[in-house]
Image (cartoon, rainbow, N blue to C red; front, side):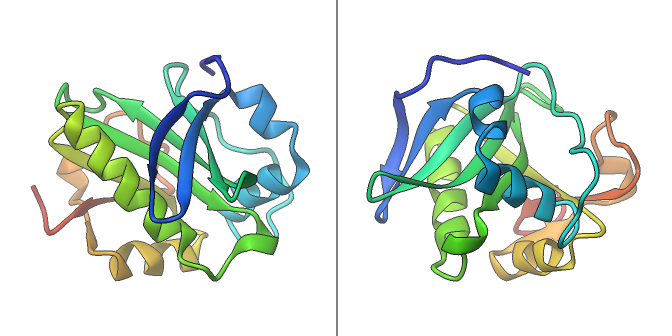
Length: 163
């Protein structure tokens, strides 16, 4: 897991900020750890899946309060792609469109950085997450399009149809 210096704002808009952080800081926060576990399956109580070593970790902040987490891997599976491994909102902060805003900010920032496609990983046990991706305009990738480092129990999505 990548360790990044904490505190630098990576993207801001729509009332939220994405602030560079690191895995250990985020995982030590019980509400953010719960958010990531719920991203696997509601009330999941097992170990979190492994994230890529080169993943970038971001705190989602709303009015200076940590409300969620995003995990991004650039240049994966192709040099012009980014893989979104997680967008997770702490239970007390759900229901305010924070995840939707975060995805829009992530897409905008990555596009500015030269990324042409964002793909999103959702564990199949996360029914709310699968439905959410469809609601925000993403569609499932075909098996041929899935990244090579796929554990088989996830669905990958891309915006606006198959690429």
